[in-house]
Image: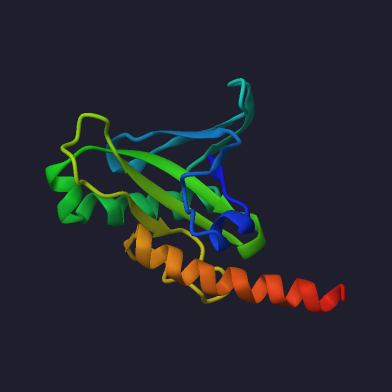
Length: 149
């Protein structure tokens, strides 16, 4: 899992400065019967859930959307999760496999709607997602600055 802070969004960086905070490993089998493991940076298992978990269901819904995209029919993607805590955002990040041809873009599928700011299970390109997040990051920053002035 990758965490992004609001300062990165404001500076126009989406995933380039993301900080690794742990992994959620998905074992996908027949009919998406998954075993979800959340691990820490040193790969210790922090929690273990079945696909009945709220997050597990949201992740798998986004994975199904990703599987239907034309891009994933032509290229391999690594599945990552991104969170932006200050914006209440969880995003499935489809990162092109290192063997992909040049020019294959990262794809992003929001798992949470961040209080209506993003469309759940809609695919975004990095630039369009970053533009939306920058607007929201500015609102949060202004709200915080006004609160402490």
